[in-house]
Image 1 (cartoon, rainbow, N blue to C red):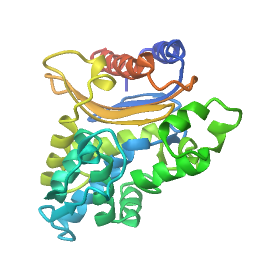
Image 2: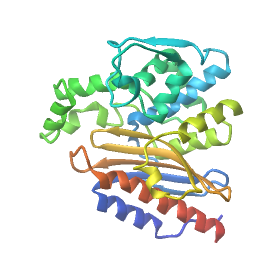
Image 3: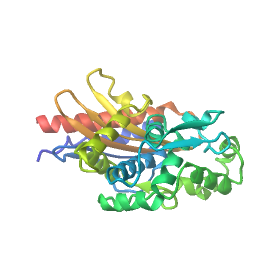
Image 4: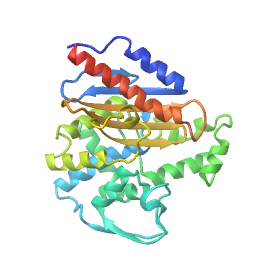
Length: 301
């Protein structure tokens, strides 16, 4: 098997360094197994990327007849998880199906939608699913509401503005369970690309359910991370972001018109407690492109 060009790791590391982040990356050709790995087996904070294994568990239960994806759910205005998108920001009562909630939790990372789906699927079922799919390091310890609660408790704060204001206090980041991969929902870049490969090869669930998952991941609206590295009309990028304080992630699949398809997982941790850091977002696309281009060159080699 031809290996990727020798200096790709150095270029990826340089890109992470220039962006002011510590980065973790795994990229693999879904069909032949070639790979690029940079700290790919170190545990990382999933943040909203936990919604991908949740999506898989949801569709497996639907395929097994354990839930009805068309089941209607009524969401009251006073019973929603905080978040900047989707149902989380609406003011009035909403009624929609479980599968439409699953759509929102992926396409716009709706926290309320994800928590409703998680309550219906069950936390244990999500972790049983990841274990069954050969992802021993991947563990989800709760949904969006649980995650926010741990942040506010650990930071002794009641709003995210307070958390940001205190984030650079000595010892604060170490106190936050949400930023410690050993004390929150976590995985590794390699396990996340394995999960994506299973979805794209129709191995994570029956083919119809895998196709439905691919459709949702392709509809994600955020263009500033993984997609920014592939600004081509004929290249399709599907993915799921994760954002939490100094954590910025995205996992996804890049598909070329010649049939090449590549699963990529990039996880980053900013060295600075800054809410808006465009270079940290952009380096996800930059390093993904470096890895994928290397895989494509080695294949053609």
